[in-house]
Every structure is written in structure tokens, then in C-alpha cells.
Length: 425
Image 1 (cartoon, rainbow, N blue to C red):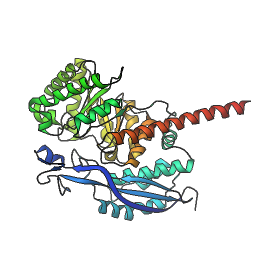
Image 2: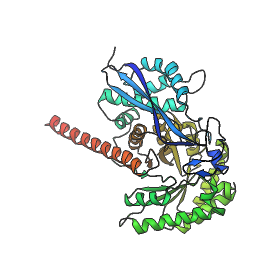
Image 3: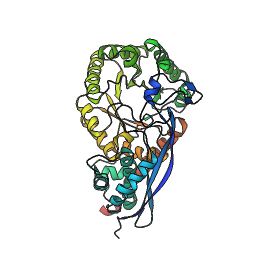
Image 4: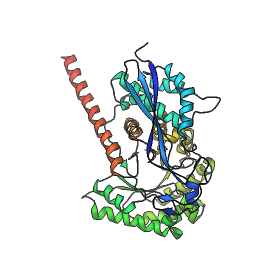
């Protein structure tokens, strides 16, 4: 058995950090009963409108008996916006055992990209479930890092011919439904980008968007009141298509609405994520390009962020080339292999489009830490604080992982400088 061999594979069922939510049922007006939604699920695979998220950990037993892990799961709004269906642990486990395990046992774990291509190859002419790609690629990246005694970020830099990074990536926190309390937490912790807002219903958006506009102005005022001197975050709101649902699906009306909000919070960069869902990737591509062009012509501080209908690496490339967004959320579980997340960031950078390494509140601590290494290695523009909706946990997991990683890379540089001095003496 070679040093780079995988000699066994083990699986461990677990939980994600939030819940799977049926977006179609929520948009249709499902009511609340405490934390639950009332009514019948509308999306295939959902047994209720809100379901506890699940995960499946995949452990690779290496030739030196070390075990490295990756986590499989899907996103909060599974089955919506062109995404894979909701995660079903038993189905994923069966596919992993029958298809993936034999491939893993034949893989060269020291070659990350090569191993991903072979292990995650199509089966019966189709891609494997994206949850499998996501978790297995995390484990393969950790295997390569273990075998080379390096960080995950260093493997990405090596395999994509990138320089070792020095700059931290701005962290973006999402509030969940506890908007006001969590905004205060974010401001007190001087988060770079905030607050998400979870504007996912007519109640939260308001007639003609008035409730949402008031919330935006409140957040800006709150940052001025509670923030430290010099604190000036980007304001980023996810409206889950509600501008289109409430204002209409005309690009000019959507652009006018967004520009008016930007004018109401002067001096702030304003990100509006998912202003509308036009129902297909092609329609989204065409209409978002119009909205971007209209906003650019007005010279506002508003920026459009695409999420729904922009899921795969191919989608990301299409939106970037068409300038159909100012910023693309690379939603990692929807992209699949984390090698493709790295490719997605680099595609955005080549096309002068912002790259936001995102994901979902339903992820795990393990997948969140992996995302930090991808974002830092590729020097993305933003990084989601995940998992969960509690704010503190996501900021801690992602922020501390980034701080540790940058400290390691700085140490490596100093050691290399010392070695070079000694070698030249």
C-alpha cells in the first residue's frame, strides 16, 4: 500500500446547523406556530415546511491510520431555484457506499484535483448528488493536506498556481429571523458585511417594500449609533426574490426601487441579493444583466448579488461573462466539489466580477472551516460566517479559522526567509 492510499472509508450520520425550509410554501404565505411553519409542504422531498437539517460525514482512513473528514449536506432552501432536492441521508449513504467508496479506495489521495475528477466522475451519465461531491471533496482536500503536512489553503494555492495569500477576507454575517438583536451583535463585533435580514415573506418585505426600506434605514442608523469610530460596514440584504414578487418583474422597476433604497442610506455600499427570481437560469441571466446595466448607468452605491438560478460552475461562468451581477454568491453545497468553488472564484476574478464564497446555515463546523481555506487561497471578495443562524457561532468558527490560517501562512513565510538566509550564507 502506497503512502498516498486510502485504505478504508467510514461514515457518520449527523446534523446540520439549522433547518431545511420549503421556500415555495413560505412564499405562498405559510403561517407560524412558534418556530414551526403551519401548512402542507409544496416542494418535493419535504415532509414538512421546516425540517431539521441532516448531514453525513465521510471519513477517509489513510495508510498511516490517520482519518480525515468531510461533511455532506444540502442547503436551507433545497429544491428551489434550480437546486438539488432536499438531503435524504439514507439515499446519500447508499449511493456513497455503492459508487463512491470503490472509487476512493483506488484514488491517489496526494493529488487533490486529480482525485476529485476520478472519484466524482459522472455515474450513468449523470453527476453524483452535489452533497456527495461537496463532502467527499472536503475529505480529499484534507487528505492531501495531511499527506503534505500543509494547510488546505496551501494545497489550493499549489494546485491552482496561486501565490500564498496575506490578506484576510471580509466576513459577512446573516441574521436569521432575530433581526434586531443579531444586528446589534454584528455591530458590536465589527462585522465587515451585514446583516442578511432574511426578507423571505410578504410580511417582512411589506406593501411596495416599505417594511424592508424601513429596516435598511434602521440598520444604517444602528451602525452609526453602536459602531466603533471608523466602523463602516457594507450593508447586504437577501430579499429572496421579493422585489420582483411585490414590485413586478420589469428590470427598470426593480432597478429604480433598489436605487431609491441606496439613496436613502448615503455613504453605504448596498448589496441586494436575489432581487427577483425570473424562473430559469437563462431568464435570470438576461434580466439581471439589464438591472446591472441600469444601476451602473445611475452611478449608485447599490450592487446586485445573484444566488437563485446561478448554482453550477457553468452558471457562474455564464453570469460572470455576461456581467449579470456585480457579485456572485458561490453557494458551496450547490456548486458541489470545493475544487469547483475555487474555480468559480477565479472565473469571477478573471471577469472583474465580485466573488462571494457562501453556503448555507444548514452546514457544519467542518464544512465552514474548509470554506475559509478556499476563500483565503483564492482571495475572494467576501466569506459567509457559517453555519447556523446564531451569528456568534458562525463568526467564531469562520473568523478564528481565518485568523489561525493567516498566522500559519505568516509563520511559513518567516521560516522560508530564515532558510533562504541560511542557504545563502
